[in-house]
Image (cartoon, rainbow, N blue to C red):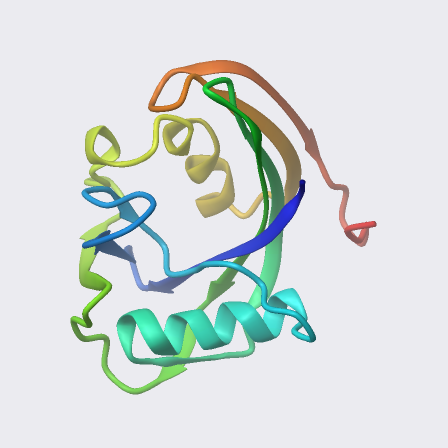
Length: 159
């Protein structure tokens, strides 16, 4: 069953905020803030709520930059459909919570070996300003078994 989820990355000049997941799915990996879209929420509302809960800031005017459909070969019922956002402004200062420990990274020093295996495939395109839809099937961990990416043209919306 498809589970809608979100990821949100905060950016400032030459840096990206990643957070170390401390518990649950993805524990021990750096990632953006995010999680499941709850009933009655839009993906944008969920991305803002999750960022507030996980790193303690309120993103201002986040923009949607990608939709990524994730599958795992080890779990045929797993299907996370992630709506990915970037925000260049926010209210508050990022701080550690029970769920995540945020840290700023220079764009040329992103810790890909401590992230999900697919991140190195799509995050550079996202940081370069590309908007896209993608599908990734992982082996249950870090090896990409299959991927497919379609880049959106200027003015094209997610449909």
